[in-house]
Length: 243
Image 1 (cartoon, rainbow, N blue to C red):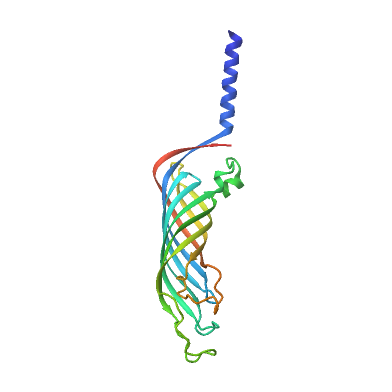
Image 2 (image 1 turned 90 degrees about the horizontal axis):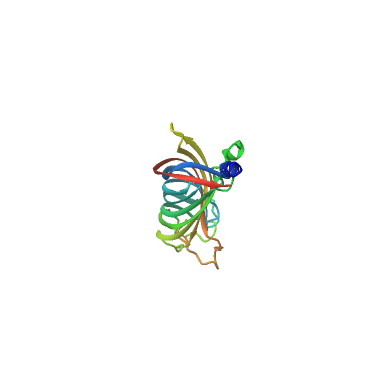
């Protein structure tokens, strides 16, 4: 009987030891919202891209602390070309809005970062992809070459639409810097993000010229470099991770 009790106690202690080192448990908030902004740079059918601006707001549901799904809305200005320096004297300004659904995966989901300062500092690195729609609103565009153009002065109009909707696919790479509240929960984040936005259609720059006359083989894109703040709220969930 004594041997049996000792055996049972030993197995219980061993099991508890293994569980302690095989699992990490923490609590986290289910939801977060974020606001931010930054600069964007275009790459479209005009020869030269240019800098614009982007502002955004988003709301995310946290499946775990390091897997999120969310909705992002953007408003900004994308521009490109230059009526003087562009070979075809083209330029445009697009005051756009967009809405996308996004999924993001963080490094913290895949590494054991407890008691490892380097990994703990890097756990906020993430990559993500999404899909949505962009509403293009061309507010300034060259449809006719100026009379002083070197080649084909007065040529036009360049075909295209001033208002259009296009499919949008954003790809995100970024980093979250986490800040705890007074109770030890992660409540705030400073976010740094680089986003490549691929549009499918010819609305981003407002030009839809035939490829026989202009090179037009790649999707129109714009890259956004932003900084933002994030706030966690909602119900608290337990996160148990097996290593």
